[in-house]
Every structure is written in structure tokens, then in C-alpha cells.
Length: 361
Image (cartoon, rainbow, N blue to C red):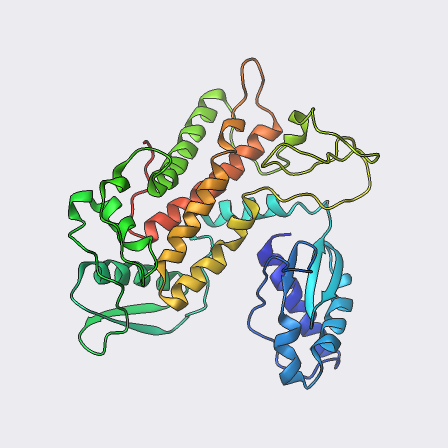
């Protein structure tokens, strides 16, 4: 079950509760999912009960209890726990591979993964000063607003509605890509650095890491083609290479290698939540990041998010292709599919920032 599917499942639970007369409230247009906060548990959490409590004229815990009962009957949901004032913490069944579903969704939507309708039909006026950083930020904001169904109009004059701290000098000598990154990556209230650091082809340069990760994915796709296999979402199979990890009496690795999920060392066995792959959270967060960047006019959020995706992706890449005499298997196809999905997010995000996503680097 993907995050989008789970969001629809929660919304369906609200609608069924309304239809049954358990809640007297208009269902929301969408349900937002987040990672469980402090004291939470499970795969996802939602505050939908808190949002509905006031219009329903009921305490949040009462609303949460009704929705919990509905969600426990939903396919793919393992458990629902109410925490705090009324947060619903949802655990998915282990056999419903969340990451696999997420990869399928991203591959189906490509670089448009994360597009939504938060600003559908709205025209947003961006009034900026005649200054290079303001122009670049406004251009990126307009692109991001379009991903949420809105349209931006960029104007000049007073009163200014978008005024980032100006660049201390002309960024043009950095070249178009590095110049845009230098202006967009810092928060609007921070003064950008226009230095040659943005041109360094090493990991200390955030832009290099993002573009390098995308270029490596494209290279892996070409190499896999030469080896005669293509991507197919599925189990990543990292447990097969974690032979040094200690296992408990149920066969689960207690100390997996860094960056890898905890998989059963033997099957079948009892369901147990697995540690998410490091890419799962940033890929899941991508639609929320686009929505937030669009509504707050903050392309720096997207830039920092792309860096988080790249940093989670890079450790995966050496594990994608078979080594030596090893033959390509299902795990290699699954890792390639995950890498392709992350690459699509990077390519789409860089395009929205007006930066090239290279096939070779």
C-alpha cells in the first residue's frame, strides 16, 4: 500500500463513518500522513481526528476511536493506535511492501510524482523587485506552483510580496546551473554565497552530490541494459548479504548493516515491522515537500529535499549491479527500480529549480 493509497483509505474510513451516522461532519478533501511523532508508533500518523473534532462537535479521542475501528477493517492495515490528544498511528501489514508500492507509483508517474491539486484553479501573484535572486526565486516558485494546479503571475513594483536577501555579487560566472543552486538552496532570509565552491566536483558540494546521484542512476540503467536485465520493483534482498548480523530466536537480524532494512533471515515467520530503507522517508515526503514549497513560496525546501534524496540514494548504488560471476536476480532488478524511482524524483526536482539533470557527469 502506497502513501497515496493509505491516504485514500483513511478518507474512505471517514466517509463510511459519516454515511453510518457515527460522525456529523463534512469529509475533508484530503488526508495528510506524516511519520509518527514522539510517542507514536507504526508506519504513518495522521491528525485527521483532531481536524474533524471541532466541526463534528465531538472530542478528538471520540473521533479517533470511531476512525480506528473503521481502519482496522481496511485491507493492508495491521494495527491502529491512538496516541496523544487523538493522533492515529497506522501500522501496515508486513506482506504489503510499502516501499515496493511506492516505487511502482513513482515509476508510473515519473518526474510528475508528487504533483497535486492543492492550488487548483488559483492564480498567485508574485510581486518582486528588480534583483537577480528575486527573479530566479520567483521563476522557481512559479514552476512549483504549477505542480499543484495553480498559476503564478510575476510582476514588479510595490508592494513587494517576494523579497529574498539579494545576492552579494553577480552569480553569472558560476554558470546557469550552479548560479541557480547558489541562489535557491539557501532560505530566502539567508544571504547566498557566490563562490567557486559551487563548481567543485566533490562530495563537499551539495549540488554535485544531487547531480552525481542522478547521473549514476542513468549510468546504472545503461549498464543493466548491457547485462540484459531491467528494473522490476520488489524485495531488495539485502538480508542475503548481512551474514554477520546477529539474529534473535525468530530469525530477525538485530544489527543489520547500516542503511539496510531488517529482513527475516528465515521464512516463514511471524510478522514484524521492518526498519524502513533510508530512501523510503524522503521519497514518501516528496509530494508534501512540493505542496509546502508551492504554498509557502520556498524553493529552498525543494533544494534541501533533493539533497536528502541524493544522500539516501548514493549508498544504494554500489549494490545495484551484480559483482563478478554473480548473475542478475530479482534483488538486482528491485534495487535498480528503487534507484530509478529516486532518480526520477531528482530529475523532476532539478527541472523545477531550472537546473539540468545530467545523463553523464
